Image 1 (cartoon, helix red, strand yellow):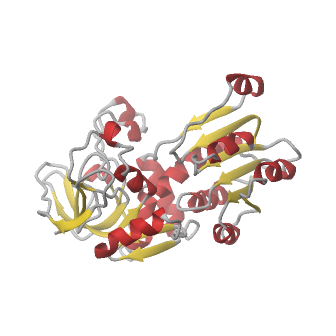
Image 2 (image 1 turned 180 degrees about the horizontal axis):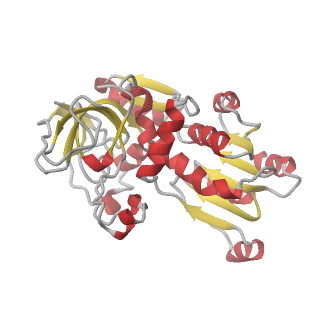
Length: 341
């Protein structure tokens, strides 16, 4: 089968032929990929940012946002059958550790992360686990939902955590309306009554945000922090969801957060430099976010199949994977890039 393989850090992946995976263990599931999301994390992987954390051995296949059709199952699999349309939670988990038992399965101590520390889904087939499979309406096209498997639940998980803080009359700033942010906007509108203010440096992204329900849009032109403060009576927002968190955006996000507010860090790439006195004197919170749980993805798919959350995508055949990565890196993708093997 064809697969997008990373052989060396700081060099482009190679599209090459590799053996198809097979279901060997009792709960193994092999999925024929119908859609594989292209994520900024894939760029960070190529840049070696994940090498120490993942411990992966090169070469390997990237791609951690996957949906498709069940192709083969292990002998103990009972929740899906060959031919079922599925979206895959990105981290196959054990189901037995404390985190799994508590429903916090994204912190499973025995999980793998295809596309990060094992072969991923930018390929014709992917080996995963029955525990990762969420069965979809057979009319669903995997290419239309694949990016919800990671970008979607990452955004949804942060909104789900922030929702109790966003009662009517509050303000939530969405910092960055790209691949994750545009899903965050829709999740906020579905789960909260907060006023949603979207900040982005790209006018097209702000236009998209407006069509998705943003109450206010602010161009990130160097004056955007003051603009947000003006919109909030000088106070800042109760919650800032930072989908950028690099190149200074992470400092702006904290500056747009009000006293006793919460700065949710979802994007990554740079350090946050905050004087500790500014944290304790204002009781502001900095909250990290990692992907989302299986239940988060199941809930998000309910919203997606009801039409309340939709992905804006640009699709590429698998052979054009390097073009998709280049377009993402250059900021030419509105929403998410999707490979369609």
